[in-house]
Length: 244
Ligand code: FPP
Image (cartoon, rainbow, N blue to C red):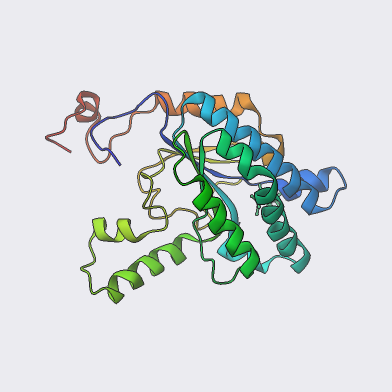
């Protein structure tokens, strides 16, 4: 993460908590999974909008460590949705220059799904237009614990830099902008380490109904903010490296 610049016009890394699929479906008397399906369609659109806006990294929360607590059919539905999306979308995403990554704990996932995730990561590894991190079986606390464990196993000193390097998103800078849809204002154990200095944008809109206008509004809102990283407004206004 650069602490030298105050606000760049376009956030390099946008992270999204795609909340509201269930309510969107229930409002239409549909099963919750129909909301997740529509949520996946929305994600395809947001990938396109992100590329067009010049965003370099898009990170989405597709399945949290806590989502196992949901009804079994919803959990297996979400697993199936990811498996199908991988089957269908990888060639087109790769064609568009998207590098796919799946931060999260894979231990609990079915071996076939794990193999598909690894294959998609391998196939798209050299793409450079957009990094798409689909956080699956991901939790911020899990991430910090697995990072600390791996440093301990290697007997490495624990510093901010070494811990950051051991986290599941070490291949990208920290998020500049975090968007949460669905009219909830909490972090829900998403990138809790990486969000330390992210700008937050909350929207009432349910994820399947998220529009390009709201996405644009989030980007414009971000562009107007002054990021200070602990400095005074005056220092930050000068981009004062010496005072950082
Ligand atoms: C939160 O909405 C959403 C999720 C737990 C799943 C997000 C999944 C997608 C957007 C589909 C893309 C999925 C894959 C597998 C790539 P919620 O169900 O908590 O909604 P609610 O708060 O209205 O109940």
